[in-house]
Length: 178
Image 1 (tube, rainbow, N blue to C red):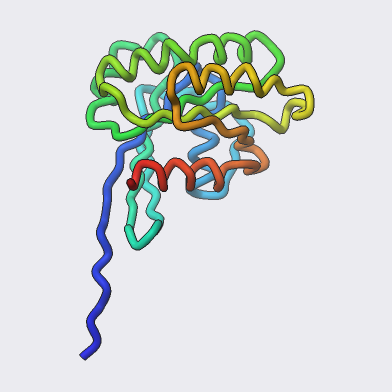
Image 2: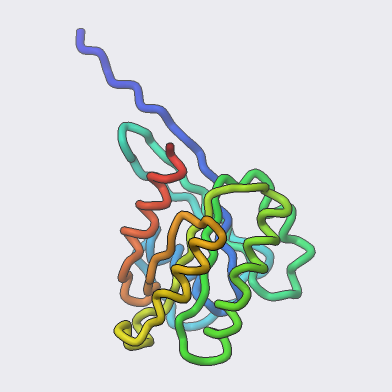
């Protein structure tokens, strides 16, 4: 009789935060369902998306909590952060006020999550790379912030094209599986 290998299963809650309009919902939909929706639909409160993967013999269920970025919902955030094991902070690379503001707010998002979750792994997704000339991207600026805050890293992503998504989400999964 052959022995079946028993796989360890991990359930990991991941909070996905960032300003409204940076593409949090679109990133999760593209990664988990392969879809991209061109129309912007504001997240009300939070949306939960499950995704299963296997890494190093572990069956991992990622539960992405896509938390509304608008200030209208700030009072709900603590209950959505509860029990998160990692956080993805998303900002927009667009060269406009949303891009600038969302980058400037990375630290605020981190402090907000840290207040309720303590020190948990943090990665930054620099989204909408398809809308800029990547060669003009100031990588040192984001790298400095990542190092100052001791984040796990940052990834340039595009919810529209899928660029960088597999690499970013898989790197996060491996890191939090440890």
